[in-house]
Amino acid sequence: MSTRPEKLPPLFDVVFRVLFDDEGEDALLLHLLNALLDWPEPLVTIAQIPSHRTGEESDAKEPVLDLVGRDGNGRLYNLEVQLQQMKAFRERTLFYWARLYTGQLRRGMDYADLRPTTGIHLLGWNLHPESAGAGTTAGDRHHAEADDQAADAHEPFTHQAPEGWHHIYELRERHTADRLTDHLELHYIEMPRFMAAVASAAEATDEAQRWLYFLSHGDTLSPTQAAALGPQIQRAEEKLRMISQDEILWRQREAQLKATLDRRAQISFAREEGIEEGIEKGIEKGIEKGIEKGTLAPLVHLYGRRLGRPLSEEERNVLQQRLATLGADRLSDLVLDVTEADALEAWLKDPGAR
Image (cartoon, rainbow, N blue to C red; front, side):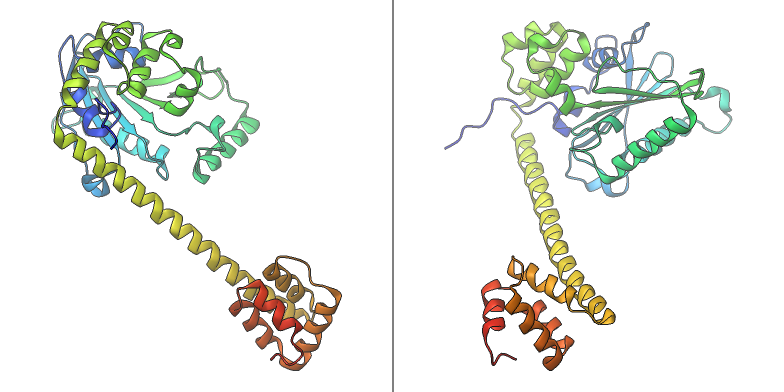
């Protein structure tokens, strides 16, 4: 019988929300934001704004989280954890930034009342163009190719990010790097790349890295190990230990894992079914194309694919004879219907086969 871990993972959506659901000058959320943003003038206080979900997210079981806060100067912050890959995620984050930004205006206000808005997204996969390949979607690779083409065409300024996992996007002039406004700032933090680069607590050399290490390993850290990461992280570990006593959260965690596994199984099944259907359609197309050209070559190729080997000279001759006597429709039906290689081979060897 397996024993349950002592603590829930900090990046589990509901746990994250409860863990950082605080306000004021000593809030854990404030310390986390200051560490991740690393601005010259740290935030001195934070107040939370109730976040709202709409559409498919309102009933989502996937780990999607939004924490929205406002600092003492009125600046807005949206902190999100997204562990599952999502189509058009860049556009989605920009849309939610825009909704939060434009939502500030009320009757009687004007554009001068708008305050800067910052989005921070902790990701369970690699989104940045340089990460194209494993862990990225076709859409991400499209963005990577488009970024490369833009670089070649316009020769924009480039600055190497000091860390490979934390990417910051702003509105700047392409050639001079002049910043248009500080009202838009988007942070993407790729947790897989961070975890690969910072494999132990000893390798976490600054406050941001220590917080990210806690978020990715907090459920396995001992109180002594957490204390070594700093007093605020020690507080967070103590709160996490308390939160983990809630049986409802454990049941929610189990339901989330089940939903994720079910979703992956459905995607895998759909993919396999699509591949099989594509093969069958490809065979049909190949036969039609071969018949149109009046050649046996496509049939020889497709029969060879079914057998898993090239046809012998004798089998090629048999196929040519039967094309003349049985017709293309019969040969095409056969290669589609007979899926076992042994049965197809026996049909080719049988002189009386029809």
